[in-house]
Length: 123
Image (cartoon, rainbow, N blue to C red; front, side, top):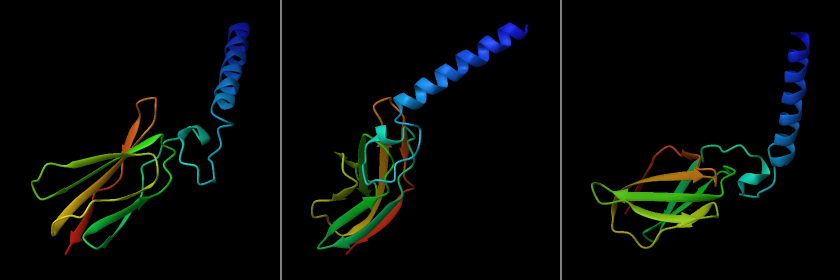
């Protein structure tokens, strides 16, 4: 029994060490890099917005994602969708109204997390 527990612990430690090496040390990155390989930990983006000349300017926190999908729509209109690798987006000129915006951060492993929806008024 003691041998099997020791073998399990050794195997677990080796596995954990390999995972940390593959993930770049397992620590969170403090750089402005937006790629998931820096930390291996995907997080929900924190979205901020402003409006200028009938365009919505969006930016969000580093979520350690490989890509971001931005959705925005007005009322019951069909959502517009844009894929970006940067952490900013400026929409095309929009009609006046109240828009809802959500950013999805996702990685190449198929994991994804969404920002909280933000309501933006375009005059």
